[in-house]
Length: 317
Image 1: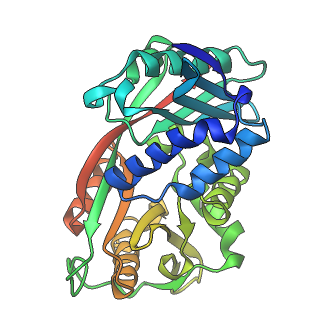
Image 2: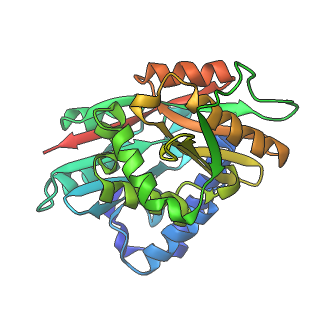
């Protein structure tokens, strides 16, 4: 099995592997990966997608790609064909691909940070090459809430009257970026995703989830902003995307520290789930860092169950 620069291949070479991966995303996460797959194929044909492919006798059996964001490298995807990774266990092909990517990024001039979140891989499955290179590992949960047949989401308590909810608007970008930065200051998730640390980074994050298909198709109808009734200032938000025809996914939910404990997060989640339920969505999913026990407890009380546990990895050079 050879590991070869991904830019030596065309979309025709990669398409069979991506078609298999798209089926896996659909089966395991109820996620339509076709838009992301099409974008990957376009970048491959343009010879602008850095990464590696595992090749045996001219056939691709796996690939991994990454992107550069200033002084940071982000691993975008890692996938190996079923026959090369039996029973969901780490395979030598995965280890080789990850090792090549990590060595390339760590040796790239100016790169001082590397991030990866491997949603398709169960926790621990490909951790060895990351840990060997000094990465921190953060287990994360993929959680799901069934919406079918519910008359409400989780009638835990009535919403307090100190705030009100309204739907997301295009004009919310700047306020939302400042809100996200304030919400995640000192939070474990800002260790995993450094875009949360600055307003400019939060704007890039918002642009990626609202205008691009990496996390599904943004759904403004189920995305809400909570505002303080007295001051009219934003105090929390929830953003949702459609990742399949009838599957919603929370891409962001956060509440300012000074407003926590007032059930703002509960109200935001209830509003999004109820809106999706009325439109005949079957499921609402989200991801959360396992160490964020307060959030995990809230989601479980709302009825979310853990679908799988995966890993996020971070390296600071």
